[in-house]
Image (cartoon, rainbow over all chains, first blue to last red; front, top):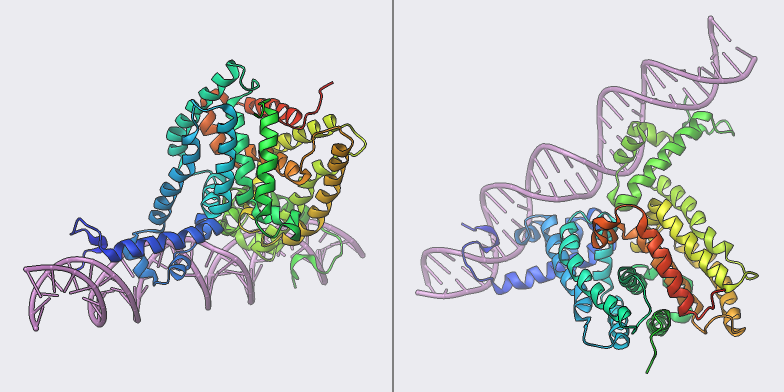
Length: 214
Length: 214
DNA sequence: GTAAGCTTTTACCAATCGGTCAAATTATCA
DNA sequence: TGATAATTTGACCGATTGGTAAAAGCTTAC
């Protein structure tokens, strides 16, 4: 008798790991492009190259796939901010934070869009994570920024809105990619726009915060 | 014999105008919260206080509602950038552009989210508008900004990415409202965050572009 | 008032949705 | 090899989807 999802054995099978990975990869494609409600299990199963019942053997529900995906993405999404270091100089920390967030927009646009879709539609599944871990992390880093301002190392400013503005400007290149491409036109068909964006944003934030470049 | 959608008469009935307006208003609610695919005609009909077939008497398909809504929103979305004036001073023009975009995020968050949903999901219905009218408008204003930089009125910078950064930072407060609220917590339950954001963004862009305040 | 056209409703449809079930197939390991 | 567990399949289900047909009800102009 086959008890689904390998409840009997503790260890996960090789096949289980492979298939679950393939499903999550396919689901990232589909969910990030169409949102949760707009995606169907059939589409994900197709993209993963398996039948719907087979997919549902690994994940009980559509929601279960989405939850696991969101969990995974959320933690990688927070990494750059985690790395924000109170010991470093404002210049290097803010510069490298901008650069890392831009690299994520370039290299992991699906992850960014998955997250954007979720937040845009009211974040029904991650409200707790936003109000808990995310808020705490931002509170902590905001204090670092405030200390820099007190020490006269950067201009006085609201640290929360500073963080928001770095988030929004960098993620814009993933979430609104179609628009960015349309406006820039053919001249930026390659990835050059990311370097231009990096140059612009670093200048904007350095001067905007009155940080002296070395 | 009732030919649908008043094909016989040229003029629109009073009832037609009222009902179509009610439908579009309801559809804005639903589409902006759940995206196109995630929304159902029933939900829109409910929100508009009428039966589904009754709604479908005024709009042949779900797509037709969405198209008309997008068209309408797109033009109001472009207004602030239209107002961007080459004759004005960089300080007043950029300041007021930021302020107007922030006011739109505060006063018309549904419109912003409808647009964000559309672009995020690949802009299948507005690609032409993005590559045509939008691009032309941005090209024109980018030239204005470039002229300011040549005249030494503002720092040299990529005008396109400047515009992107103003778009993204301001719309962030509409599109990612849930996240902003979660991170700021209870202390900003009212609309205070918009004033704080305005202060921060004006400072960031004024100093970032090395514009002297009068 | 009445007839023509406009609006609304009731009943309905085929397609698709998320998900189940039992049987068939395949992999694993003693 | 054989038995046991893991995986895959096809057939199916009730609910919901976008949309239609036709008749009933309502407005409006004459």
